[in-house]
Amino acid sequence: MLEIDVKVKLQGKSILIIEDDFVLLKGMAEAFSRAGAIVAVAPDGVIGTQQFAKSRPDLVITDIIMPDKEGIETIAEMRAFAPALPILAISGGGRVKAGEFLSLARSLGATDVMAKPFRTQDLLDKAAELLPASSEQS
Image (tube, rainbow, N blue to C red):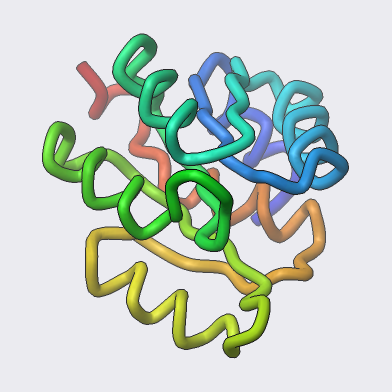
């Protein structure tokens, strides 16, 4: 996907990023903001679920392995309230291979998955793919 197309698709879209690694969270938030998205962030699933309830974003990007509330539980809760919400699960795996967590996330409701580390442009491209066209949204 061309970079210009990604910016057009992300422009004005609300994106909630849930990630416990502050440096990665900040970097992702900055990249989406530069692309024109409206970004909300949360350091864990507890705060992420609260943010979701308040803002009902167009897209959620969530880590899987986090303190307080894991991404799997976070995805399941969000999916119960918003069956069509695009959710991108990301994970580096920790002590277990990332693929195992990502497969579980997909089976429990994530729309798509990405293994860490990833290139910022790949993340933006994936997010743009997951967002419905403006005319499709309510």
